[in-house]
Image 1: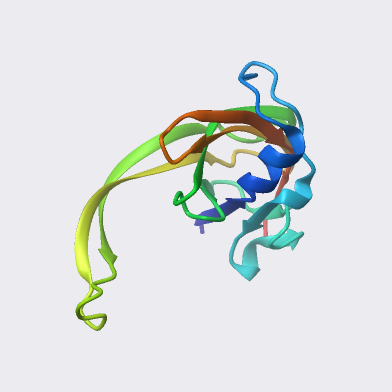
Image 2: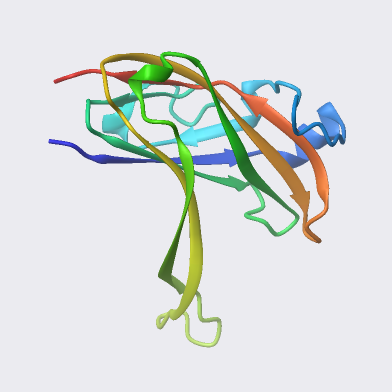
Length: 167
């Protein structure tokens, strides 16, 4: 049976900008060390690398994979946004990943009464693809880092994996 695998990608934007410098190189961003990226999925979807930058995600044919990115400060100091998916090997095994936007209602903390969260309507962004054939996909995500004013700090990329099997 097909399933949706959500991949949370938390990026250490401060360390990346400090170490790799500011740039405006959207067309050819530098490749960063995967130790500055933390990817998390449910344990049942891990081949190897849980909570690391080279997470190998397990999927079966027909599954949907959704990636969501955030900075370690969750946008308070800096934000990050994926802007391009680059397939390296096994591109034919997945549909072309693309960005999506969905309007959702989410609970948010209510400081005067923490036991009664408020509700807030917001846009939810993610990248998604469908798995089409068995094999291994290697890819790069290119992303930008922005300060809290929305100004570009730099563009960067790194390369994780997807393993597709039929169970």
